[in-house]
Length: 68
Image (cartoon, rainbow, N blue to C red; front, side):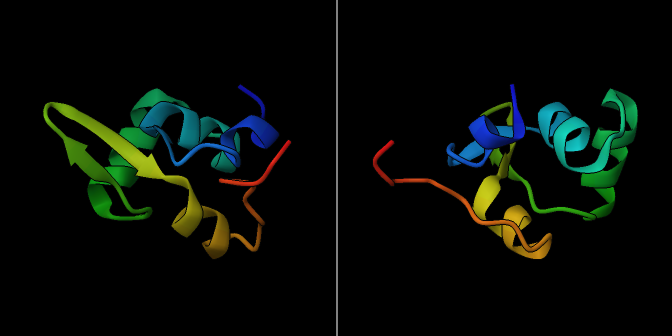
């Protein structure tokens, strides 16, 4: 997934968020999420990252809901 693709989705995985936005690996991404370094949402047994708050925190604009 590219950064542009991530910015067009409502949520992404913790691993994708860590890799795309912070350049960190799987274990570091889950540790950062556990510490609360970025917002997560638990959906059943899955943990996902809402893209809009993360992008805003980093000064990026999302394309969610915009025509391509």
